[in-house]
Image (cartoon, rainbow, N blue to C red; front, side):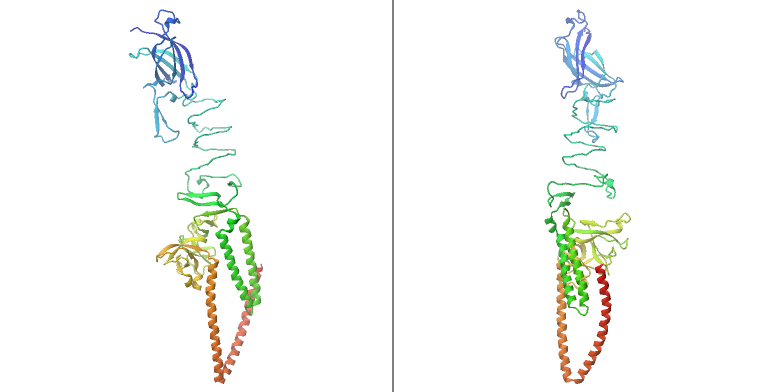
Length: 564
């Protein structure tokens, strides 16, 4: 076979952007030196000749970075024009393995031998060109060799800029932008992102930031609520915390903050108007309680007005007490309605305070009844100042332990609202729940009609559910007696007292009638009865005088304390 010798007259090796293409434009003239004409003569060209062109790009250590082959045909003047990167990669071209998404699962990868995988890292690159004129024999001859002195294409992979890279115009990134090795990225202008932005490191913003859409923070941090760094969102560096502004005026339909868990909404901080505040159950409850106290105080004033011999002193004291009660009512309503703004709502139903246990090692579980002694709690109830219940999950918790107190040394104790209470025996809705005298934290149910005066001192609350189970169980109980319950209780015992008074009156009348009959029948009975009356009268006078002195001292001290 006749050997053919080629010479490449290099016309251009240029880097140019062609839309979304990847490659290097390459043009050359193919000349056959075996032809008779001199070099450059028209007869030396190889016009309209089908050739196989092999392009090989090697790095500074002469290792192949990329190799491809293309079947091309020269034009009428022997010129071949191709784009390196559009051919078929050969088996000598290295296989590149990469993750499909930066920092994603390493097992999710893809492999390729494509031109865009070449690492343009600033080191020397060489382009070698070989030609084959006979596809059947696939004999390649060296055609051209060029040093690549610059990065040929802006869309190529792994472009490394050793110095500063200044871009005067707009830069469009149609794929990932990775800033590695802990280097910073400084933006002095506006950054606009059309899609999702993932930040895998720390983001520091030294100026005001405006978000015009939702912000979701999904962080996996520790669950230690006492550690400020254990929260997904931490705000610090100012005298104030978070300011929340809703559109329009506040109302119960506005949720400033809403609390969720896997089961849905568990609570929220909502707006509140004056009308909503006056319709709030707690506001109504407190005013009804004051009304009940007013009724009771009115009864005390009436009793003091007719009582003897200390009626004047008692009346003065009870009038002072009434004035103080009126002042309390006015003060409560002024402060309750002065700063109407927001209200807190939750599935929990009681207000509670943390109180230390009297005996640190005593086990007190939620729902157990406790006695309060000087601000400390125990399941013992004898002579307790108050009888309350350990709360499970209060809507509001006050008196949180100080840094010198251990939260594990106390319990959350319910003061008002709904709490589950451990009760033994059958329970009917409306029954009073009273503390067991055994001091075991368990309650008993007593119907209103069977409640005794002694049991009333051990009332915890009122059952809001029925349970026919005779064993121990949790019963939903409202704690903090309502005024109408007190009034009903007082009316019941007042009726009993009135009935006893009538019976005593009838008995006295019967005794008087009997005395009159006996005095007529037995003259000596009258004389004996008069002597006994004189003795009893003298003893009574001495006893009353002594009581009057002691009572006057006590009343004066009480009046002075009230006035103070």
